[in-house]
Amino acid sequence: MLITLREVYILANAKIIQGKQAAVEEITTKLRESSCTVVADYRGLNVKQVTELRKSLREAGIEFQVLKNSILRRATAGADLTEMDSVLTGPTAIAFSKEDAVAPAKILSEFAKKNEALQLKGGVVEGQFMDAVQIKAIADLPSREGLLSMLLSVLQAPMRNFALAVKAVAEKQEA
Image (cartoon, rainbow, N blue to C red):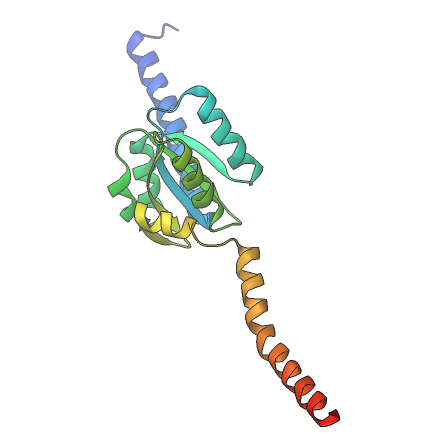
């Protein structure tokens, strides 16, 4: 059997298309399962800076990838997040977090403060599209532990004040 060059080309294209379809399905799944997804422009970062960024994201359990915008657009369509398409221009890096809805925004925002080359474009937090300004605002929020400690102090304040008032009345009656 003699295989023509055209048949080889068709087989190669079919394999490439299957690979791209698998990538789109994988990214679509990540977009659906992610509690926070942040898109950034990494243009201007050197290898050392990107490695440092990847390390800090990996330590927080965040997946960071550089993806083609065409694949991302197909994935956003599959995940019903087409609002994200407006920020999919130029070089695109994307961070996915399944657990923490604030960590990717915090880490990327802190890194962007130190390295002006990294520009936040936007993202999706708990299914809601947010632009770069909103992502930066989320990054400025205290951590979950910080918020819980603030809540605890607010809940304890009335009890503490009541205890102090009772103690003052008891001391006054003793005198």
